[in-house]
Image 1 (cartoon, helix red, strand yellow):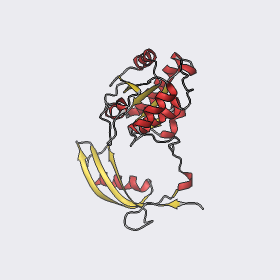
Image 2 (cartoon, helix red, strand yellow):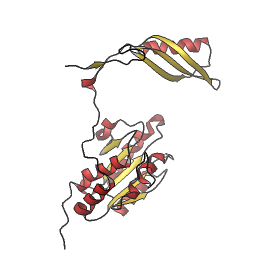
Image 3 (tube, one colour):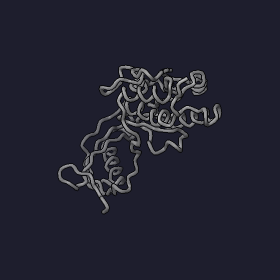
Image 4 (cartoon, one colour):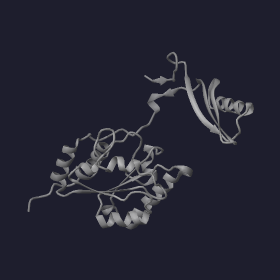
Length: 250
């Protein structure tokens, strides 16, 4: 059975949505009219202007409220589901020790001009995020956090020197699709520097990435909002450790 849904605000299926945006126009009656016209063209019926505030002299921030005319078929929604078991730190450590026979090396960084380390630190630093400790807490993981504004050639060289199993890159700056350009540059640099068998797993994350675009960007996995250290650690075990042959005793 086809599952069709529509947003609602007061009653189920009334289609009511609230939308905010900025227009590059001074705040006046014409600007407010332009905001309502834009909402109408976006498929919002009988839009109401509920908030308008000047941003400097030449921009205005708006909030509009109205009924969306569009319907969503849930069967046509495509998302990236977690296709591996979620492990706790003890299970991750045991899997790495038993199957890999050495510490798993993770190199992380913010590349290009991105100086926002909150994302990469949340995953790597021992303090972690959302009540979970970061990858530095996992005794069988060796974490090298290069910090912010790391040039792609420097990241590649350090990953090679460390014999990294995985490279984690966080991108928060998205103006003019900088996160996409930087990711493509990074994946191309690793393809040029290393043959497929020696290339580390490439993982990127950030609030503006589409998780479905990993293949297009040349990386192995994309993590978006809400990702926790256990999500990443479990993925690394799934891709690197589970597939690795067990170490035979000497």
